[in-house]
Amino acid sequence: MRSVFYLLDAAPYGSEKAYGVLNAAAVSIKMDVTLGLYADGVYLALAGQDSRALGVPNLADIIYAYPEIRVLAHEPSMAERGLLRQGLIERVELADEEVFMEQIREAEGFMIL
Amino acid sequence: MKTLTIILTDGPYISEYAEIAYKIAIEALKISQVNIFLYLDAVNIPKLGQKPSLFGNAGLLFQDLAERGAVVRACVRCAAARGYLAVEDGVCPDYHQGIKITSLYDLAEMLKESDKVIALSR
Image (cartoon, rainbow over all chains, first blue to last red; front, side, top):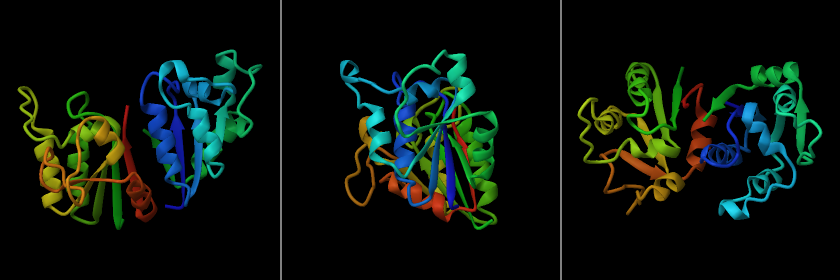
């Protein structure tokens, strides 16, 4: 397998899910790796995250630390949550429905963890 | 198909994914190499001493897969977070035989060498 698309559809904090997906993506960078943020997963795209009060790692730092991971935020999910006017992490690309699904289709592996 | 990798993230009895993975792996082992990576709560699956009253023992299923030649590995970070520690060469005294604790980088290697990947996750 030469490319993998990880889909995150859960909010970044409050469970281990997003941290787990990010770590799996981080170790996969010898392949073409894309992280797709969908549904509540799009909250991970927001700039200015501060998780200190939660006592857990700031997951945005992992996105900054691994520029090899292409990060797509599903634009309709952002719109449904009223997030389109929010500032995003600079590396995050907004992807409309067509582009997002096209990237899933083109990847050799598709993973929801 | 030469190599199949199955990824699990659920604990043993919150869903039937462990049993489904077992059945898929049994069939796949007839024609290919099978890797299984236990991630997040799935690292609880191979715990020794489980006594489920309503279900089959999930740990025994994965010991059986390892005995049949499947490579079954558990994420070290997830395992340590839940109190499972490897003593030597990935062997964990709290786990059924044949299942080893390993780096998450092994997941990436499994993915790279796989012709097919199945992730069973909620």
